[in-house]
Length: 382
Image 1: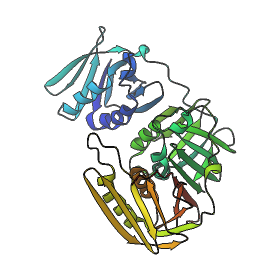
Image 2: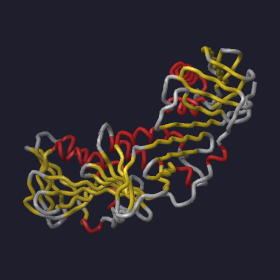
Image 3: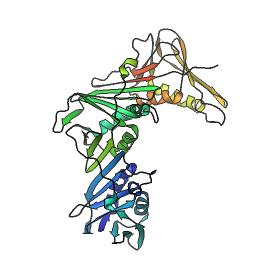
Image 4: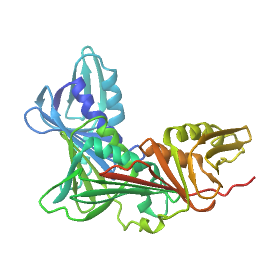
């Protein structure tokens, strides 16, 4: 096999695939990138860690000899970055010795046979939807912080998508915070079968990779649903992920309503105060546990205080407050993540007591979208 690449084009297609290369496997093939010639000058890259993967096709400068091979992905990427020149030549001989060269510099690597790469799932589906890549990235970013990293309830390790041709709802919950993002009119039905009402749960680690791949692109992407996978197609690239099997919890039952203590406060001002409090509340000095940030509501003043073995911080800001005065403690990082994900000039906070959840919603409502965040308090010790 012999392929001549434009270096910039090669990197533009290799880099998005690196996030689905396995780094903790005894199977050498999935630590690599599968490189295949597809006829003419078309080349295809595939990576797959057995849970998620990327397949991308593009035009090389020339393909003098067709074939396929697997190269250790990280090493291949490092070599491409270090080689000078605008053209990169990859050749693989009968003994599976790969030579990567540009100008007077060349590297040799051992390759694996292309057929040793694991079979990919079917990268198609009979139903799905199309949506702006920028819109999808924004909505994922508004809920991804509430995905659990580890939990004995697998569904909490992903984002729950519930949708129809007229709406989409994204939900995540890690047991301490709940995030709900609802929007209308942003999706279009595609596929052989009508979309109807449907749902799926995509793992958080897969969504993080998807948002990296989307980057700053503003184009229409397609999401197709297979039996056990979601397949995302955009501009010559296919990203796919195994879905989490199971039924999502009835999150609406835990969303508190009609809470008597209500607060309206400038979001950026509150976020600034919480960021300052986090310097103390998240102190990682050896032997000390993480502290909490205490919110105190008295009249039209909202105060933030936190103390740890290394110091104390306090801040206060004006707010509109209805209901009783209250003191309540939170994990500072959980609160920061939810306030940061919220949009709008002001946020609407509601509470009932120091031991029950606080909700966060926008003061200024948008016609076609809304969000809801909930954060559990911590028990304070003086």
